[in-house]
Length: 297
Ligand code: GLU
Image (cartoon, rainbow, N blue to C red; front, side, top):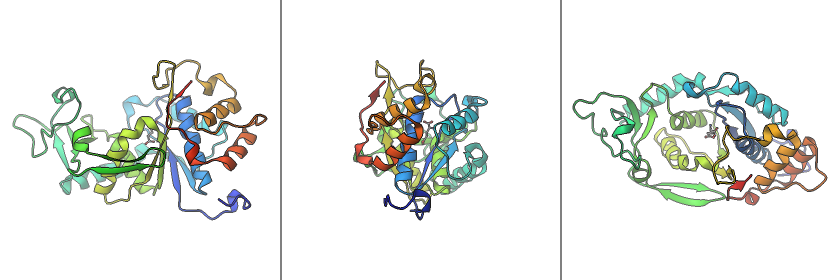
């Protein structure tokens, strides 16, 4: 990054990042960390930062939550590039992708319910070569490749995953007819030309599945970067139901300073306003400083 050229005068680099909150409640501190990390990573690469409201699971969507989350991002001074996208509006694109995978033999109708799966949760391939007699189609699953997928994360190195062993064929259209997160995220990342996915480490298990789906749909997978989780004193992931969330319990500048600490960028003393914190963070941001360990709040 050439710090002598003002940010808004630099040519776009082709980097395209996104933040994709699920509108199931207010933006909690764990999500703020993901927003700040993805935002700074995009800005430090001279890239674009888009916001996609992941409203693909209507039974879990809370009315007003998306607006509330967007207002929180604005309050912290994070302005998305381009219009905010609402994922449900891409349903026809998600449906077309499922049809394509079915037509290509890369997906199949499955008649199993959760109760039919072993306790490991790994799909044993029951309906892979056709519905067994007496079963009716419920969901659609993506046929995971037999060969291992290789995933890379700049903070966590590279690893190989045999999806047949870790999860088995992945549900892409659920029994209730809605498209599954794995499918919708991949289709939209591909469509929007996302080059780097920066999100919380709770989604690290999705990277291999999404990488395989990207390839099946003929796309180049993005790079993955997983940020440290924020946990409570008993090691549990901070959730929307956790009390005294810094996003609401503290002034915005204090919550931002804490998010930067989680991300391995503790601001120096004296940086107390949002503007001063952002200016410092943009100038100091270095991917290698982000820890992998969970942060206990
Ligand atoms: N919607 C997910 C969340 O709120 C993020 C999904 C993603 O970034 O792929 O944690």
